[in-house]
Length: 126
Image 1: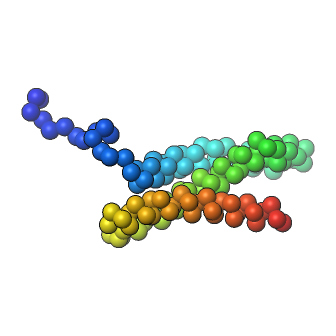
Image 2: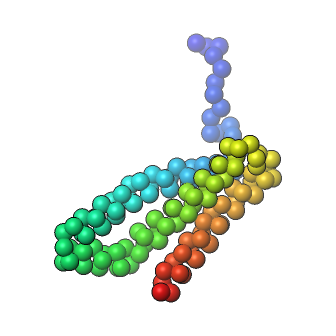
Image 3: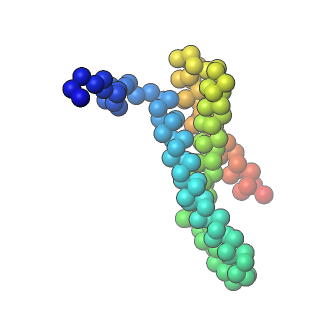
């Protein structure tokens, strides 16, 4: 047992944007699964329960807290989407060059933020 090799640990690896994106991918997926499922079930329950309950749901979702939840969910969706597309490109064998990987690791969350802003600008302009 004393001569077994040790796996590299987080203190050994140099942190980079690709590690942050990997962690964000997992966190946003979990967040959408938990918070998104809660909002979806609440919305469906409100639809099935009648106009008064749906009005209650609508008042919560159009309050500042509701907007934070909805903007957060849309940010999580776009962040997860961009990270997933980055992983898809990596899975087909492209983008492993250090500069390319770093560039897309930095660009993914920036593009996700721009998509979130554009999405909400479109929704609020209607």
